[in-house]
Amino acid sequence: MKKSYCPIDTFINTIKGKRKSTIILHLSQGDKRYNELVKLIPDISERMMSKQLKELEADNLINRKVFPEVPPRVEYSLTDLGEEIHPFLKGMFKGGIIFEKMIASEEN
Image (cartoon, rainbow, N blue to C red):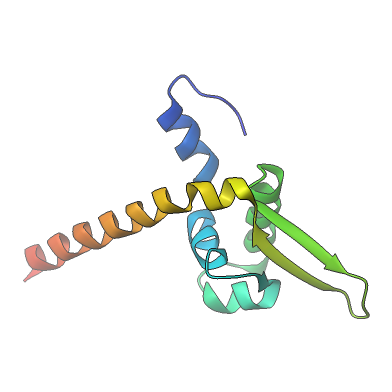
C-alpha cells in the first residue's frame, strides 16, 4: 500500500486490480477457501487470483490461514481493515447497479 496525494487515490490504488473488490465482497460473507473463490469468480485465471490474493494479504486487507493438513488447506478471511472498507465497496457496488440500469435503458 502506498500513500497518494489524495486519500481517494490511495483507496482506489489499493483496491484496484483484477477483481480485488469482488474478492473482498465475497469474503465479507464468510471465510472462503481458494477453490471457492475461483468458482465464485470464474472470469479470472488461477494465476491472477493468486496474485490478487497475495496483494490483498500484503495490504493487510485479508488473512491467509494455512491448516497443517495433507493436502494443505488454506482459508481466506477479511482483516479488521478489510471489514472496515467493506461498506465503501458495498456502496460502490450499489452505484455500479445504478449505472448499469442507466446503460441498459440507453440501449433500449
